[in-house]
Image (cartoon, rainbow, N blue to C red; front, side, top):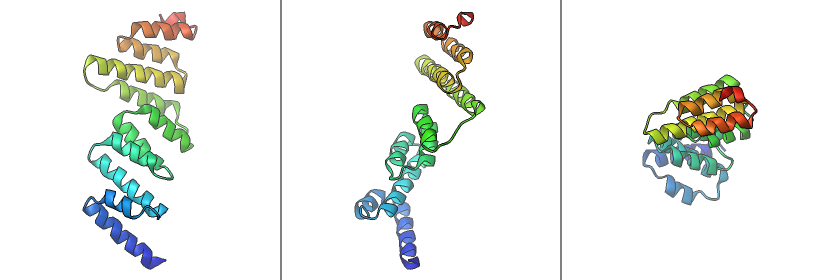
Length: 163
């Protein structure tokens, strides 16, 4: 019904303008479609406020899940496992180049030495799991000063030429 849709649009504008998402979720529990719209709106607000972990949770709690928002939030907060899970649920196939670019983006994050090592380890895992590129994965591990892990991965894949 057009009149009802108009009222819901006005209500959503009011909720967004005055940050009344929590109240909106309480009031519209019985209207599944509108409840989901409020959830997605809240997730978008969290993304704008640079609260990407919270946004990711909200997008994935929406029913049905908001996978597009989930992917954006997962990338923003660096949760590559959630990103790839959202892509799989969305039946999105990433090319090897897209996966490699994501791994390189993760490995280029700045921070303290532990953060850098974690980033290189994550990048290596992505290259291993999603591109089957053991050589580049070992290179990432070595770049992150994770020599033992690089050696382990090389031997695990019968690639002594990488050590």
